Amino acid sequence: MTITAVPTPDPYVVFLRDTFFLTFTSGNRVEIWSSPTLLGFYTYPRKTVVWQPEHGYPFSGNIWAPELHALCGRWYIYVSCDHPLIGNASHRLCVLRGPPTDVSPCEAPWEFLGPLPGLPPHQWSIDGTVFELDDQLYCVYSGWPLLAGYPGESIKSMVERGRSQDESIQELYIAHMASPELVDSFAVRISAPEHRWEFSGSSGINEGPQYLKASDGSWKGIVFSCAGSWTRDYKMATLQYVGGEPLNPRAWVKSRRPLLQAWSPKLGSIGEGGRRDVGPFGPGHGSFIRMPHGMSGTADEDSDGGMLCVFHATDRPDSGWEGRKARAQRVSFTSDGPDMGGFVGRVTTDVDEFMGCRAVNILGVPGGHGGRSRANGNSRRASIKAKFKGLLGCGLR
Image (cartoon, rainbow, N blue to C red; front, side, top):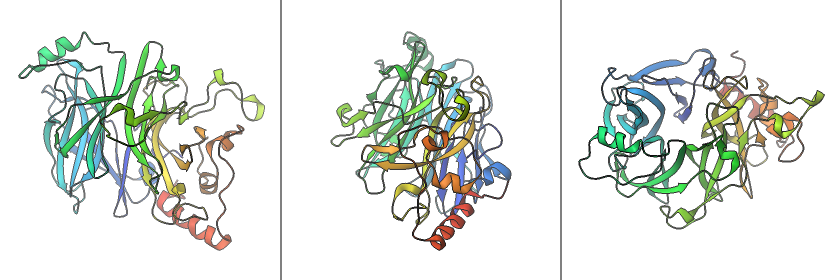
């Protein structure tokens, strides 16, 4: 399902106290949309700008991928910004402090705290996310290969020295956090581009990390985006946490194939008439929300059938960075981990189709997980359908 009518790249959705909150890349500001339903973002979202720095100052340019988090009783936003007089090489992961979580994040002032303390100050860093693992707080972000710095080094010096890095490579790093406002460990690389499908030409990219776990804890890990975000081949893959010290790279195992991608002509033809270009295209930078209890549409109300991935994708294969709208697709878990059918499903506004089909079956591709989910009786299915429709906001368009 497409859930926004206008471009909303790098979408991040939070569901709290019967309200969905959406943040995304706006360019020169941080904006929060709120809605009682997901499809309300398509029709009549409430839009609130919570931070818009004066242009020309440090960390006022190219404001990318804000994420809204409720941590330790307070709202925080993690966002990447650069110095407009220096450019992309000065991108750093920054943090904003908001109101207590018993207040709407749209209702109170926000304070810009600056670059996240404790991260390597000389490293290009974007797409930060924060999560709890085994009762400890961690930050994972995308960065250029790490170079050693020295105390007191100026931003200009760091940027100039950083230009010697290979800017075509983006890796994933993890660091332990003492609090939502402070990193207290070294940053450790846990993923670097290695598979051909993680590259676009010579650019090897790992970015947009998101923590994800099954409801029963049987799978924990990171979903990340790879290849060029400006291409139709942008996609998502996983890093499974296999136990042990999270700061040990061996605690993370990369998937052998993508979790979600668009169908490509190089993969052959599919469906009726042998279609070769099936959009949406370039699915990536996803976030995950677990729908309320009983929304799965399966016999097991505690299953993860009620989990959704919200990601961006384009309608055309040649759109580049233009037209990246937020989409939603269901996520299930198998013995191998999260499953989204492998490919983006075709766009639908039919809640039965959305609830009951995996993307592979919608596309008519053999293999994977498919078939309609069956509830215990027609009345229960109708009840689940009505609840799901209410949260999605179906019928609003």
